[in-house]
Amino acid sequence: MTHALTRPRRVPPDEVLARLGEPEAMTKAKIFDRIDQYSRRFIAHSPFLAMATADAAGRADCTPRGDYPGFVKVLDERTLAIPDRPGNKIADSFRNLAENDGIGLLFLIPGVRETLRVNGRAYPTDEPDVLVRMQTEAKEPMLALVVEVAEVYLHCGRALIRSRLWDPASQALAAEIPSPGEMAIGQLGLDLDPKLIDSRLEAGYRELY
Image (cartoon, rainbow, N blue to C red; front, side, top):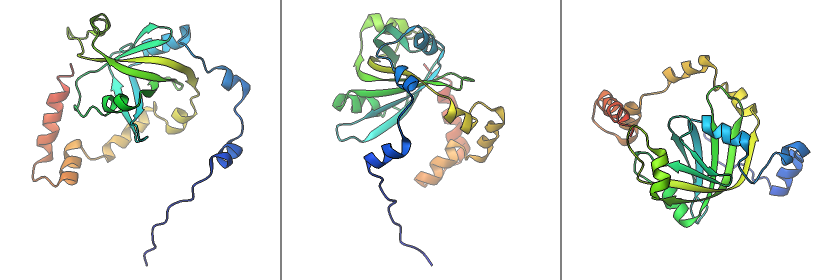
């Protein structure tokens, strides 16, 4: 017997807050409106971030960004710059920011359980003085995102501890995931050898810049 799919109950915002309770005073106190020496150092050592944006209708998107540690540049205590490296050219983040300039960043450092969160507003730039600071492998990005910082805070490590993200044993899970080629063939119904797609991807990965 099959059951009709029902939508889970929506918990009202006031009930959510009542259940969660109030954050501790120290938690509130560590939310800053600028990049201090500690967050600057965290950003300088981070090779990866997740970037969240949304369009005018509130449809959200989260995209990964990564490069050598310190690829995000601190221009001053209230301004960051993120290089736009070659990717899939879908440009969801740029399309969203053209309608809604709000942005959220989550910085990670391998082996560090805590993450750094930065919220603010962003816009693209082609300012030469900014792009030249992001030159990698003798190439400059064509564009960068300038982030005007509104909030900065260190997020506790509970999520990364629970996920065992940095535990080498967790990498064994990768063997259970189909390759990108196998996924593409299954999703798109292609009559191709998945190894062909995987080899093309690997060739593209060798040309990161």
